[in-house]
Amino acid sequence: MSARYNEIHARSLADPEVFWAEAAEAIHWERRWDRVLDDSRAPFYRWFAGGATNTCYNALDRHVEGGRADQLALIYDSPITGVVERFTYRELRDRVARVAGVLAEAGVEKGDRVLVYMPMVPEAVIAMLACARLGAVHSVVFGGFAASELAVRIDDATPKVVLSASCGIEPNRIVPYKPLLDEAIDIAAHKPGRCVILQRPQEVADLVEGRDLDWMAAEASAEPQPCTWVEATDPLYILYTSGTTGQPKGIVRDNGGHLVALNWSMKNIYGVEPGEVYWAASDVGWVVGHSYIVYGPLIHGNTTVLFEGKPVGTPDAAVYWRVIAEHDVRVLFTAPTAFRAIKREDPTGELIRPEQIAGLRALFLAGERADPDTVQWAEDRLGVPVIDHWWQTETGWSICANPAGIELMPIKHGSPTKPVPGWDVRVLDEAQHEVAAGEIGALVARLPLPPGSFPTLWQAEERYREAYLEEFPGYYKTGDAGYIDEDGYVYVMTRTDDVINVAGHRLSTGQMEEVLAAHPDVAECAVVGVADELKGQTPLGLLVLNAGVERDHGAIQGEAVRLVREQIGPVASFKTAIVVGRLPKTRSGKILRGTVQKIADSEAYTVPPTIDDPAILPEIAEALRSAGYAGG
Ligand code: COA
Ligand code: AMP
Image (cartoon, rainbow, N blue to C red):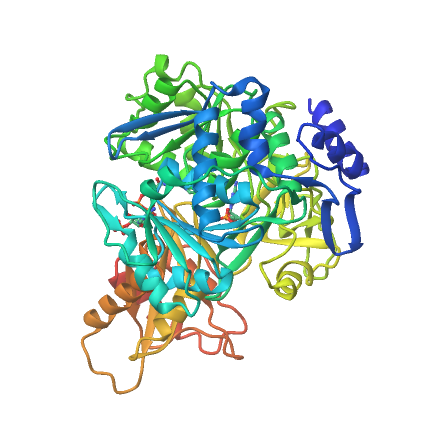
């Protein structure tokens, strides 16, 4: 077993230039590269330097010209609105070319940024590809973020144009995007010159005279645009993700390396052939949506499914099986939390009709740790390999996986299997030494990272170096901790920073603390991620009030919850804040967040030797117990 994987993985590390040059043959290059790997500025590496290409050309035009014009490129399935729409490669190319025309008329040129704030509608995909067509850099912002988060991204990316919609639709409410966008532009120092608004019938937005355009009217009269050739190393997009502080990290993706890596991954990791239907049930606002709803499947000539719904409640826990049957889905990719939601509603799997999923070959999971119970449940009910794979916004595609298109290795629950070709994963201790098999340490990847992974942070090269390259020279620090077993299987256990993972969404507890600390009655606070049966983790805030504050604690707690929702967004799922007398700290003043989390989760813990006053721990346990946490 694993001979074929071993051979290919070894080859990818022994001579990465030969390996990735071979993979690059599947891509259209308007001009070939000078160097496959440019290491002249190591530890900053660039792939396919000197090459010229266009991502939209490779995702659409190439297939239209190459015989796939009438094949379906995109199926939009929206149980939340009751709409199903299908687009061939030709239809999608034509709409993208027109929307590129709208952008061009607004003055967008190669290198300009365009912010995309859209729900899961076809126009979101069209928006991204239209930017790529012009060589403009898109920055997609997830709909669940609040106006101030949108404003931070507007100020950092300084977009010339914003592409948005009147509203998103959640099962329990309409989310009016346009007022959020208006508020964000008010808050932001940078003012985009033009907003193009897709009016949805569920909620029609007011347009600002002179700034806003109606999307459909503008598209109808726009001049279709051809593809603009860009350097392989030019940025395709910026995607912001949570870091340690309130200032999100602008992950940059280039064009050339991204094209090569994603195209390669479709066959080798997911095992799909061009023409087959591939469904990533995620959101275009996350990296999974960028790579595997939009770019990967289209670059590879697949049909992609864009699903505007939830795994449960739209209308029920059988919707995934209906979509798989109706559109002939071969491979499904989602987050474990979606399966936990389905399992909760349909524990015995009686809604899964075998004939509906007969064509499904594999389920891929990522975004958070895949708990063995959920994996087992899915294996038993679906009867196909359930493949956990590990990746990050930074990497753009998986670091570890069971590469179904190379060979399916035996699955070990709790492990995303082995490093993908191109990735040299190690576990290091604090002194930067490799640890023995089975020992936990920092998960790092030896440089250079393969194509597709981020070359830098948007206008923050120094932060890139500090955050990812400094602590372990010669390696990329993933921010995850874990171990590698005797058989070379990697286990990803926990983050080493302030990032938590809530329903597959990456959030910063440090950022939530910044928001809570701004409450006038709060002297200090701590946010920890506590275990949640559905979402994996949810945030819990502890508040210490200023001396002399005599207001009702319940009112302050409610205000704290509202503040996080208003300033970060509903996606933070911040529902509980508890007032406590004091916080446990080390003698040097560091808050013992890990200990608080363990108490809340009833996990065994040792009293840290550096603790300032151990008597605080029973107080915290009592406060957590009375708030409904185990506190044991
Ligand atoms: N626009 C506006 N609000 C949004 C939103 C969007 N695009 N997406 C989520 N929200 C809101 C939700 O309505 C919810 O608001 P509420 O507090 O008023 O209920 C809040 O943000 C939290 O959303 P979520 O964490 O998704 O929880 P949920 O209870 O609505 O749904 C699941 C739980 C498991 C069904 C859901 O998380 C899910 O479908 N996950 C699938 C996996 C996934 O998409 N992962 C992404 C990475 S692969
Ligand atoms: P994001 O950047 O939003 O994709 O989140 C990346 C983080 O999610 C990683 O650093 C991990 O902490 C976690 N993660 C993603 N996939 C997995 C997985 N398969 N197993 C464990 N953790 C994962």
